Amino acid sequence: MHRPSRIGLVLSGGGARAAYQVGVLLGISKLLPDPAKNPFPIICGTSAGAINAVALASGAANYQLAVATLAKVWKQLHIQDVYDASAGYFFKTFLHFGISLMSAGHAWPNPQSFLDNAPLREMLARTMQFGGIEHSIDNGCLQALALTASCYTTGMSVTFFQGLETLEEWTRYQRLGIRERIGLDHLMATAAIPLIFPSVRIGEKFYCDGAVRQLSPLSPALHLGAEKLFVVGLASQRPDIIERRNSGAYPMPAQIFGHLLNSVFIDSMAVDMERLTRVNHTVSLLQSNEALASQTQLKRVEIFQLNPSKSLEGIVYRHTHLFPPILRFIMKGTGATRQRGTALATYLLFEPGYCRELIALGYRDTLQQKEAISQFLEL
Figure (tube, one colour):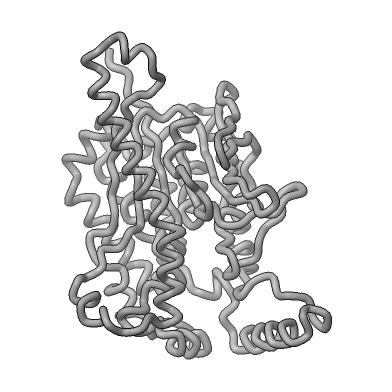
């Protein structure tokens, strides 16, 4: 009897864009012969993707219920559930930055970040059932959960994982795999976008968003035993017409910062996918020569990647009015409410109107490829 392949789910980061992943997971629940059975024994997440990963792993005993519960949270999410966007907060923050800069940090210590994500910590503490991760592992619904964070102290990309006792820690160039019981601090650390959100202390070290310096975002799943990878990316399909219309204009601050965020969250995944494709091609060539094939540890890894089929900038452009007044004023000043600067808004607009549209897009994209996905998942 054919043994099902161990499929690793890889959920990349991207702030509010991660709502798209929820739609994909909902779509998959409609394809499963048994909607309660988790098709992903290995789940890896980074940044906002880690939030989805923890929710799915902790509820792996009933996949359909876990995804439906996660979707309910995203559909009701507001900016104030993620970070403080009040006028009082921004007045205090700008004053803090100004005094700290003018006094070289003597009159008032340097601020830890531009935004305060204490509301996110409170919301995750209420909604995430971290004890469910161990339960999922014990009852055989899950083999491993992995979250990746970047360590300010050592400069290493650190993957914290919780899983079967047979899984071993690993050390590679600029990256580590460490066995730990996943908790709230790990989740907050992997989602701590530098400068935007404060870093998080775990043990004696400080960590920030796992997408930073993550040279091989696909490797944690492979280290944990995945034989196939289902990757839900968040790379936006940007319309060429916008690029042509504004190609000669000087980039606005929001456009520059959005470009930096795209580099952090998207580029490393694209490069790693390219690398794995080359490895697969090499392995296929070696298979014709048993002597050479026996001298390498390389193995072929089948991949299925799903990215948004529509422009996320185009979607968020219709919803920028949902930003709270003071934040809308700031975003407008930086150019984030204009078409060529909306990349920044795609990461920060945690509002139902935008998130629900991304969930619907992920759901449609999944069902449009239902035959290919069903075949890949061996349903």
